[in-house]
Image (cartoon, rainbow, N blue to C red):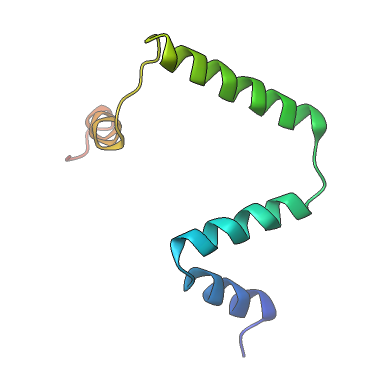
Length: 77
């Protein structure tokens, strides 16, 4: 018999993407927050936004990064 966690997990995964995102946000918000960690992440997000806006970000799409990682590991793309 599945546990409550297993049932909830399966049901959550069956939700549409927007509802899963909302549920994830609400679950994260329900956990005790580490103010220092949250502040650090907020500062990093702002730094990245500023770098992108200034054209200084080394942004690459997922497929490119994955291909480069696989090549570096000697795996087929």
